[in-house]
Image 1 (cartoon, rainbow, N blue to C red):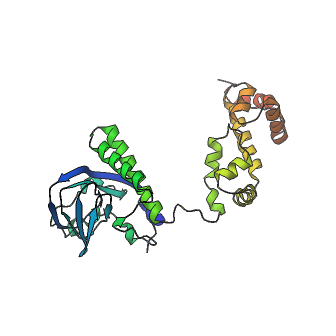
Image 2: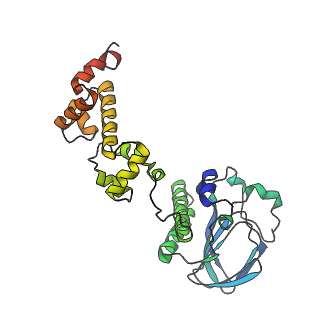
Image 3: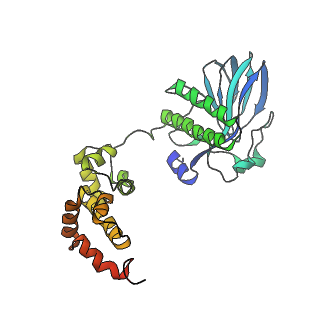
Length: 300
């Protein structure tokens, strides 16, 4: 059975809202159908009856219902109801614009098999009930209502915001019903993101304690895991990144030496010059002159 992580590698989580609205209705019915996508319903007012695969449940104000693809279901408003809802995809599909909210009585999805979203409950370790209770129901409700409101403004930026809010809702659902958000024992693979983090913060005054805190590890454990992956201690690795960037700036720009030192995260010009000469074998100014013939300051 495929895991959520394996599925995401093939079909990234990229919500696509297909239909989204406030449904204000007198007692009503939606006959049996099956879904191509996900249907999220919030019972804001009234009482809703959901018959899912032959099993009937009554929902009251304040409750949420999530129906997954292929689910055979029928809906009935037992009283006047206000039920904000959204039909949406969770996983990216290149033909998503061809899909649609199925109609009453549409139970044979064979002609549309290529459009059906993967079911979360078909994944290993997943069990997301139709009647779910968010860990933070007020935040979930407010996010959903904002999503519906943005979607119904119909302009591009509000529609974009609605898609972002849909992502928030999905993250909340997955946090409540998977173990993906929990911390596991650190391993070498858990620090693969560190290089990007260091490059992004190269001009900052980073310490090993800062890096360890970012990785949710103790400094001693961080040093061990870091060296396992990168082959050298974190402070030495960071110094190499700083000096490599300094070499690029010395070769390719005419920035003053104190500016190069600042951009590369050295405390001052003296520290920069001492570290540079100790590792590179030349003072920064001499390095720039020696490289100028082949770079910006040589022949043109």
